[in-house]
Length: 132
Image (cartoon, rainbow, N blue to C red; front, side, top):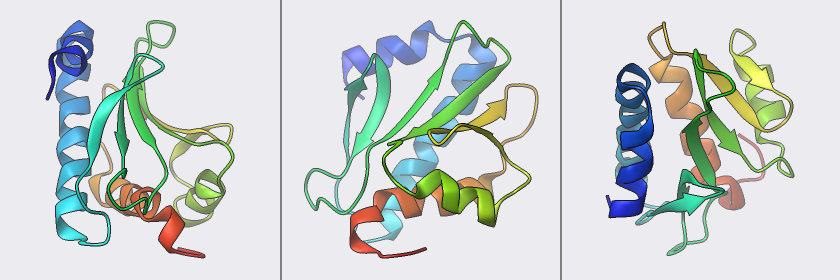
């Protein structure tokens, strides 16, 4: 993790930071398990940790973040011009969504790792698939 990305994670409250670092690990694990994703680029987009498939161009950008305006939540943010969130709503109606751009998670609950894994894989392979 480069210094600017690490600084953003370090700025988050401790409990949320641990959850987001877990999501970050799941993102990298998903990329390792799917050879079509390739090496990820970790950077900042809009001041938030973002994950890009620059090497293979297989996926859409995925961001993860906590926002001061919603201190008890954090989220996974997707390109709003994709069909990703609409698809996730169909597959996982139990999750909480913000418009067509995010899955919102409670800082007080254990993340739904299995569901998130599928959503992450779909995002990082979005341009290689017609449908999930």
